View (tube, rainbow, N blue to C red):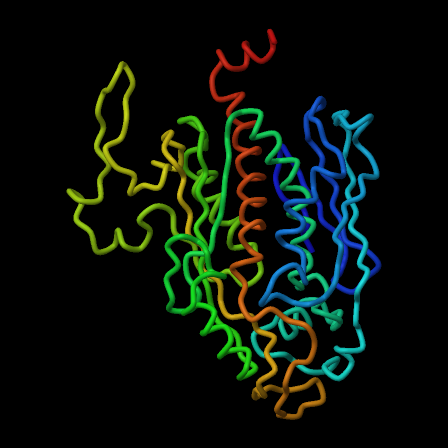
Length: 350
């Protein structure tokens, strides 16, 4: 099972939903970056269960402990080990589904691949694994902040309810839909948009390691994601070239685009505009409503999933998408140091 992401800024995650701890090791973080336990608090709280309405009520403080790679609050250039202890496991909730293939989950495919699975919360397939990504993303975001690159994700739809301002908790139609789903023991799909600002033009690789390709892969690695669009996305499939193309214009000695249907990436390389990524998520698979399924004993049965589960993914996925994008960008930025001999010589002289 591969659990390593990246090639310059490499992140290896470990742990299961109901094990003693989860965590990650970051290899390739430059020395000299301020990084202390308190730096993780805000982003970890955004993802943490029990921190908001309509989220799993599992109570986890999700405090990040730094085991290595820093000295007096500064990174040393050596591997950074981060750990988050699990405090509120309720493994007994899963005993009655130990032999059941839960609809929509990876139970069947994990068994087919490995011949064994951790049924307690889904093990590595649990959304809890994303806490380790968020922790690693904090370091990546801090690197990007030093370069003037920022990012923010927000919810743009819950079910068929559009949320233009991102305030899903203040949207009466969205809340009514969530309440209706929860009352029925059901769940609902959702979408987020991620906007990256401040990335210079020229970041990304042609052909196989396009910035767009790496970002899509990163977003699709998030549990429950079902589709990714960059810029106009699939709307471009019904557009004419005359409407979809972004023109160019010189202004004050600099070249600018007249639009941004490309979403900040052209030919797989950043063009200096905002990068706009939309990610769609399926309804969470764990629902209390009885569903047709099968078990490992060869029986067709009906099952309802007990436990503490989210009725919607997007609100807690925003910070995960930011973390994954940050790790992609750091890897691509580091790649750009060797794009030209002038950059190589500049870095060497520095």
